[in-house]
Image (cartoon, rainbow, N blue to C red; front, side, top):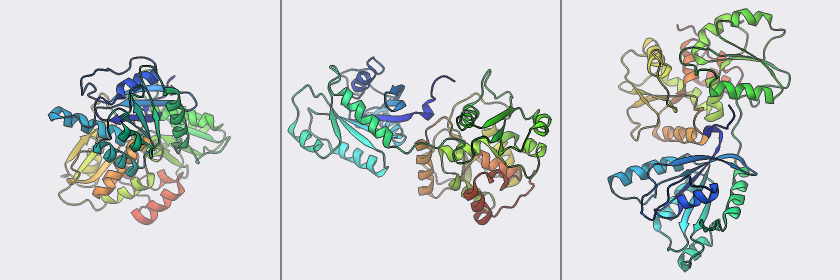
Length: 411
């Protein structure tokens, strides 16, 4: 892996009305044509995301969106997609024409951004034309930069302001943050099966290994079939063993019972989401509400295998251990209506930003729908809780006291 994945880049979302100059501004920042520009309203349809190295801030990604005043049946769909992109923003960049008076929708958009706690900046476009006095008065109380995209006037000031906003963001935790010390030994169990990408490791494995190296730790990377051969040869006890969640049962059988064990999915549940909230969601498994469904949310697209974790393994285990009659749904995004669901089981979220995952968790909390994580569900199903939470003292205690778990052998 030689480029930073989009999921690890700070997401800067351009939003505003049609023909506000969003696409032109994006082209001016990139100094090349990355978005289509036209005088015709509604040129931008789907959100367009491009990676960018912002000097002084590092890897970011800019997303150009459709105008939030779009019209017609297709316009409403474009608006919905633009709003979803805005919900995932780490930084919101409102683009507003300096030549037009303020629009009530712009006030509502800023109100929504503030409600979500998203840092924002206003780019006042068309600064090379005569300004509307009402827009100037409106901008006076807002953090803004005047820009003229064709001449790139104000672009350097704008990017400088964005650098400061990026620096103000709380950094996303790394997979091993607070869990290891310099000189620790880790064992990373990496199955190489039909679902594994050819010639490379998957993102959670790569990031965890790199994080171990950055923290001056040593890591043994081994397939699950060779773990029993190499584990006894280790010179000392590992800090903990990290496995793919689907190999939990075999790995647990091949290492001592007192060896701390967790999974990549659980590490990413903490990195991308809220591990404590996922732990609390496990309570739904012991008292699943009658008449409800389960929603499995997988953030990325991939070719499904015959024994796919989301569509086959998780439903099969749930039907064996909880209720054989509960229907399952599968989605990449949360549906508008969450009322049919008694539980959501979410993937590790490695291919989306932390803010995107947290926005989903907040929606579920507002709807009163419990949520857990692939890795936690599989650990629970294999009787490996609270053991799989031992590296996380707070969540370990939370599981023992609130969810009610000692180690139980289920399958």
